[in-house]
Amino acid sequence: MAKQYFRPGNMLYPLPAVMVSCQRQGEKPNIITVAWAGTICSSPAMVSISVRKERYSYKIIKDTGEFVINLVTKDLVRALDYCGVRSGRDVDKYKEMHLTVLPSRIVAVPGIGESPVNIECRVTETKSLGSHDLFLAEVVNVTVEDQYMNRNGKFELNQAGLVTYSHGEYFELGKRLGSFGYSVQKERKKNKKK
Image (cartoon, rainbow, N blue to C red):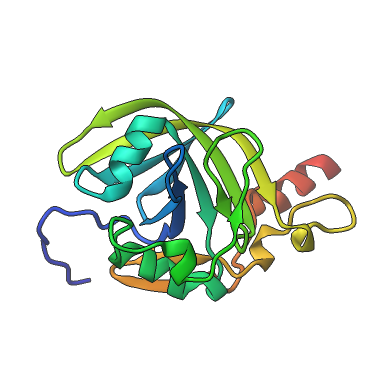
């Protein structure tokens, strides 16, 4: 197997591609596209996003300490891209992309109505790391779209057509390859029979 060394860089792909909404009181809401977002803790539920200091949304999030992570479907991929290449200093992204301002339940920042999941977040810590600052945040509320709830009350998120980002391109999640724990399921059943 032939391999070669490559320059150090962020090669951890694919990543979730999300739209993060933010707003200062009395100003128009804004959206920033973020591919550097992740889950960091389950109890309490916490997430992180990394944002360049020169981005318009950076100062809004820094000042308010709140944001909403809006998951993206294939129907939102054009808006996702637009919100990553246009600045909220110059345009109203909600208006330009015909997105619905969705009032949040806990934070003062709206979500995006067309998103299947809106994750309301409060910043608990900011870490300056170089080109980006890392915002660590507690999840204070989650809004989910009814159409993805099954009869048993389970949220069928994988039916939403979520989008990922990999090395400069967007992809829709595809074929299911397994589920958590499937590699040892047969072994467990076998041991139970003994």
